[in-house]
Structure formats: structure tokens, C-alpha cells
Image (cartoon, rainbow over all chains, first blue to last red; front, side):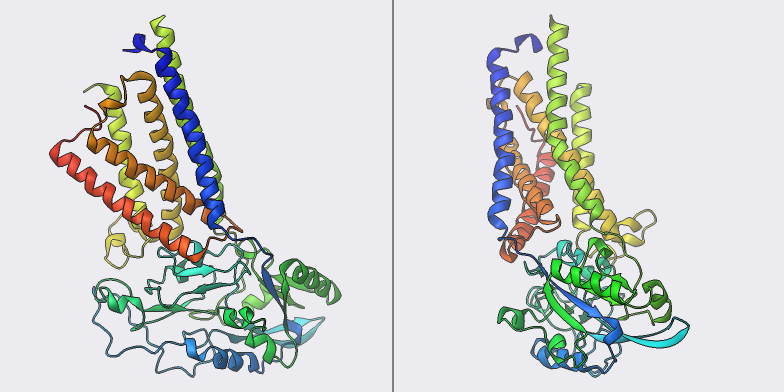
Length: 321
Length: 148
């Protein structure tokens, strides 16, 4: 068989190789046409030393986003199998001490010692709006989206409430409400379970040139919003000034929510109440890093395949001689 | 059946099995339906693990497809040997690889795809997968080969 290898066959292979290169280029071109012009993401800076825990931000968030809150249909459809949990916050809308589908921002309390003096600190907590958000990138339906201004949000018209985003989120931020959303129109007993909700950093206000409600309402100017590079400069200057610490700059590969505290975050993490709807302040490795590294390895795959085929061709040609 | 052909079929079969399994595991269904509770299958409910598995299986599949394609070009008599089912599966595989490659690019840091593009890619990738599975099962039952 191999003795019949002709120049024609070889040329055909070469043309196919050129085709493969062209295909790779086409994929890159297609990807480019689907991406939008890259802008610098906006980030928020939270100076914990200024926060007095008045909850003005919490109530401003609830007011600004009230029309986005779920209005579930009851009774909920019976779901199979029985282990599928019904998560209903519609009768507990007033809860403000944790994250819920009706409370996208809450205040966490911590006690610490600074220069030998015991102090109480309060920390506004909400979605960190990661640089490379696993909730968005791993959503199987494209229900979660990332805007080029750095915010990530969940589309309530598309989300099926599978809660994968919550499991993928290093801080388990999104919260589910059963009995609402697209799943009700599909196969409610067998697939889906509502819609996931979380802070969308007031995307609609940002579109109008306004700042998020929590920032506007704060009487102590705890939060600042701006281009990420500027926010990081401010955060480092502030941390230097107060001999403090930064959280969010490198967590999960970088986020667009930067906290500055006079107390080490390891210490704060030991003091805050952590649990359901109450995220930690641990160090977080870049959860998407392994995928990014494998993506780079993927470029080698077609080259390896081509090399193997050429190798086999070369060896068989040599044997025939 | 010669050893080379059997090896090719085995590699393709195993890769297709793992890429499909890890692909379906991107949806939160294995935990819900107790499949991840079966001893040895707990990893199916771990999204970062299945994400890695899917990427690794994709690397193997892409390398294998390119190898078979060039091997065929160098050693076989011509394109006219490819059957209708073979051509159909090649088109579907190409669709899967291209849509998958775009999704890998989408998952890179600082890459923003439009929301519509992401939804189209997700649905296209799932659609290609379902069609390939159906055609592969049909080919197995009806003993349809890639080449005559």
C-alpha cells in the first residue's frame, strides 16, 4: 500500500495541512468577530475602616433592584427525584443578615485587635465580580454573562436554576428561588429548579451613567468605583497609608471588588460568621487557571496529530525503500 | 480486522465516551439523578474535574482526528472511499471541534463574547453532540463504516 505513495498523495496531504492552518485561522477570526472591543473593567474599592454598618447600602440595593426580585408561582411544581430541594425565600423577603434572592448585599461583622485595641469592623459583602468569573464561564446555558465593564450577572429569563454557578463560585454567592423562570415552561418536574440571583452591580444604572445604588447611598463613602488599574493604585495607596491589607486583587485570579482593611483578612475570616449565604474571606486560588493552562495545551493537539501522521508516513516510506 | 484499525477504533470509542460523559456532566444532572452517587462516579458532580476531563478528552480527540485525517490522505486511495455516513460524521465532528474551540477561547481570561454568541455556541455544541451520538449509534446498529 505504502509503495503507492505518490507525489500527488503527498501534495494532497500538504494542501490539507494548509487547510488545517486556514481552519485554525478561521476559528481565531470567528472568535475575534464574536468578541467586543475590550475596555478596561470597572472595579470597586471598599475601605472597611470607614464602614459603620448602618446598612444604608443594603436598603438602597433592595430598593434599586426590587423590580428584579422573583415573584414565584405557587404551588411549586412537584419535582423529581425527591432530593431536589425547594428553595423559597419569597416569604422571608425581609432577611438582611445574609445573601438571599431578595438580598444581594449584606453586612458582615468582625471583631479584631489593632495596635492592642479591640475594634469592631463591618464589611459589606456581595458578588466579587471576578475577572474571569467561573459562574459565567461554566454556565452550561449561557444564562450568566459578563459585561465588558467587568460586572457579571445572571439573566433571569434564561436561568434554569441548576445552581452550578453557586457550586463553581469560590464564595458560593448566587442564591436560588424556586418556582420562577424558564424551567416552568419546559419540564419543571425533571429539569431546572428556578432562577439564581446575585448582585449585578446595578448594570442598568451603570448603562445610564449612574453609579450602583450601594455606592450612592453610603453616607461614609466606603465605596469608590473606577477603572480597575486606578482602583488598584488607590487601594495600594490606602493600604500603605493605614498599614493595611488588600483582598480581591489576586483572589480567584483577580476580582473587580477590592477590599482594604486595617486588619489582616486571615484574622477577619476567623471572626466573621461563615455559612449559607455568608461568604468567607479566605485566600482563593485561581479556579479557572487549570482550564486556561489546558487551553494552551490544546494548541499542541493538532500539531501532535500531524506530526504522528508524518512520522508514520516517513517510517513506512523508509521501510519501502 | 488489522491491529491498526482496531487501535484506531478503540481510541476513538474511548475518547468519544469520555468526552460525551464529561460534556453532559457540564449540566447539573448527575447529582440530581443519583448517578454521581454510584461508587466511582462521584467525580461527575465535581464541575472543575469534569471541565478538566472534557478539555483533556478534547485534546485527545483533536490530535486523533488530525492524525487520522493526514494518515488517510497519505496512505489511502482517495476521498471517493469515504461513505455518506462517513462524510456526515466528518461534518458533525468538524462542527463540534470548531464550536468547542470557540468555547475554549471564550473561557480564557479577559475574553468577552457577546451574550448571543455564547448562547448560540452552547446550543450548537450540544446540538452537534446529540447528532453525532445518534449517527454513531445508527452506524453501530446498521454496521455503517467510515470508508468503503
